[in-house]
Length: 382
Image 1 (tube, helix red, strand yellow):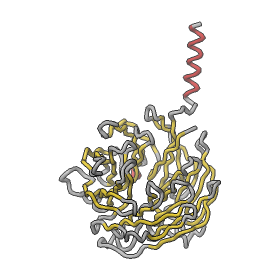
Image 2 (image 1 turned 120 degrees about the horizontal axis):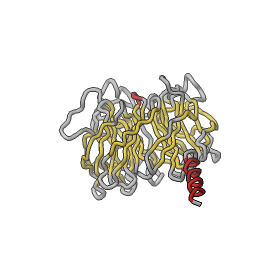
Image 3 (image 1 turned 90 degrees about the horizontal axis):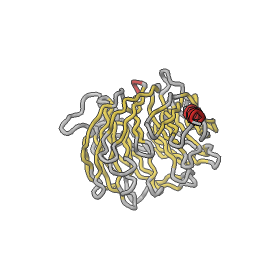
Image 4 (image 1 turned 60 degrees about the vertical axis):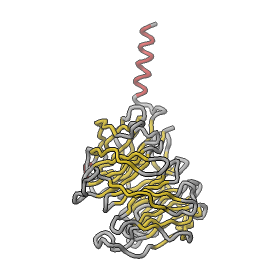
């Protein structure tokens, strides 16, 4: 009887090495393809242990630098950051069907972004419209999404105008992110080239963007270079990370879409000046709403803050090395247990455990090889 039990449990353990457990999550990595990368890669994260399986190519593509998941979890979208609408008409944005069991991707269709140099995309909460920030073209565009996941028609194209004080980086408009508000009424767009955050009204079914006449946009300190933005999951606060000054601006936002400034804080340790060659990249709030994180390229660090949930203001906690070069992006898994740093120039993804009580990042020692990783998206397995 004991021998039969040993054989039974041995078989179960062996089969579990090849099975996807309920704690698994697919992680899709967007990349730059100038080097060894061939497109979009996928790994499996064991949420219980933080272990990542070897990354495998699941969709050959050119420079799929940023990815976005449909709210229903069945479709994945990728932009080609190198695509130019005049040079490659009809190309630049791809839609994929996602197999929730195997993780494989099947190309559905591809269309033009409506501009050039797309760098960021997002899906509205209803899954009816896709939004794009076109860094190179200085514009924001939106297209409809069809019920079968395919990309529909280009519905909006708004051109930004102007410049700011940095002649190398702010010679014209450079929208760097596009973010639907939690109530899905507005779309906030940080423009690195104009030192401003714009707010547009969104009609999700038609993917129509219109100027929010209630406000004219929010100006930030000249030369700061707003890059990415994140909303607090529970309170009416939003945070903007500034690429050129290595700072974070905290805001309160109201029902009209206005941003009211609360605080500016450095992404570097207190009292430390910005080293030459250092710039920020990603910003995210922990799912519990207690902590905020940002990444510093050049310094190759992740910064952690505590959020005061009454005032929205930030208190510096720590800076930790990413154990890789150029953390262009990082991502928190939906449980908030793990943070993955995508280190573009060292071809690695490093795994940190998040202390849910203190918000501090604990190095696990795990490094996954992914060529030129610049984005990560989590998809729970079925």
